[in-house]
Length: 65
Ligand code: F3S
Image (cartoon, rainbow, N blue to C red; front, side):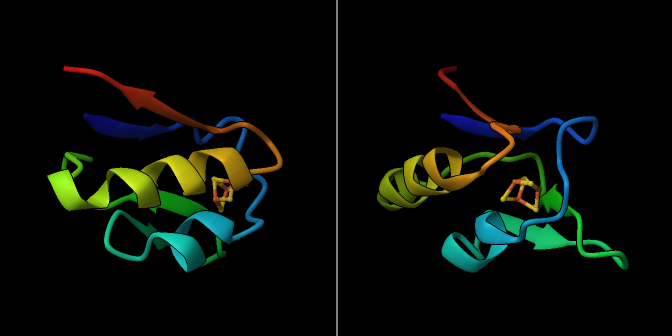
């Protein structure tokens, strides 16, 4: 599984990097970004789902590989 973040939808609410700091970081202006290539480790799937579910802008997608 991978996470994807649509920068066109992100409004910088910050829930993704608060809830899943191993998967998301923030840029200088507080917008979210995917760390690395977005690959979710097996023990990180719950975190990834929580981040996606809690983004008010629905900017995060989970992609099955
Ligand atoms: Fe942006 Fe949503 Fe994260 S608005 S900062 S992707 S919680």
